[in-house]
Image 1 (cartoon, rainbow, N blue to C red):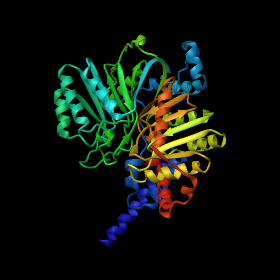
Image 2 (image 1 turned 180 degrees about the horizontal axis):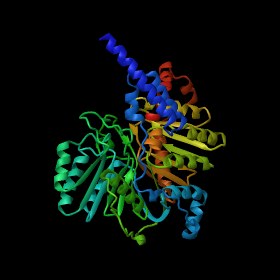
Image 3 (image 1 turned 30 degrees about the vertical axis):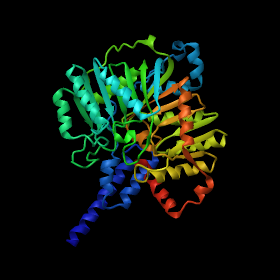
Image 4 (image 1 turned 180 degrees about the vertical axis):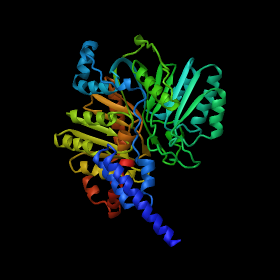
Length: 473
């Protein structure tokens, strides 16, 4: 038995070396990811290759329809009125970049509604579903069948009987709180239900070699007229009834031209899962007269995109900041270029305020947060830890002029591995978003430099370990 164990160990070492060579010579990765996986593979004889299979394999498949990624130039100034030109002049370079890689222009005939509390989000979402006449398309990382999700599932069963077309996408790693029996009930009723990279093994969350690539989006599209999105999944945690207690998050709804980009993103997800190239949405008509002038640009991203558009947007916003950078995120785990950009901003006199949770919802995340904000704290950044539960908001505001919000966290996973969708918004709505951050700061405890320097050895050790795991947290 001992000889078998020794032989198996030698075999696993050989397998790890092979995988390390693949990472070095065949995978086109950032150096930090390459070094991370080489270290894991060469130092962990027994489980390194297993970790690599589940968390390290690159997502090779590019977007199903390459035409959406062809470079395309647009004459922006020709299509903008004077008021819009003034408001986005500073950000036109970023807008052009996003249009070039996503073919999603900044639109202006939109209305934006911000829901400061989860109950308002779910109330309005439920009301819109009740009033649906033609279609309901939902794509959620978590859509549990609990006291929040169950009434929505029941409502959807009623709507499909009325002839409303319903399509649902949930993530295989995120949505574990819905039974097979419930899914079968939905499908029998005529609801089209798809799971994004489902687990092949019961009770195993990541039982799929692609489970590391998660559909982290939260989208509900009703009759092609209104879109709900933000950081809120569908489940009891998001109304403060989970293990972390009070839950602070951001939800919003949209009407107007920007909905077209959300519809197309849902369409691409659906085509990918169904392996179908049939166009779902054609000649979508948007009533422009009912909406205010709110400049919005939708930013989607995923591991199969040519460009890391979420990361690039974060970086561009920070680099262009002149006065202030306000960040609210559950996971402050930036990559090196973004961390360096924040340092440069601080040295340049830009005020940086970051609001994070005082507790962690995942192993090592709390300590990773602490490691990364420590470098900024020494340069004058203001770090706040939310005191009353867990903060899950994903919000960046620059100079009080432009906000970036949606499903993307301020971490490696959202920048490089997850399928995400967020938006850039300018205009009067920035004021209410700034008020939200100001309120959360009042409900937070500021971290002092002295407190940080006097942290214990345990904290320092856990920070050092967590920073090494940053690429997969």
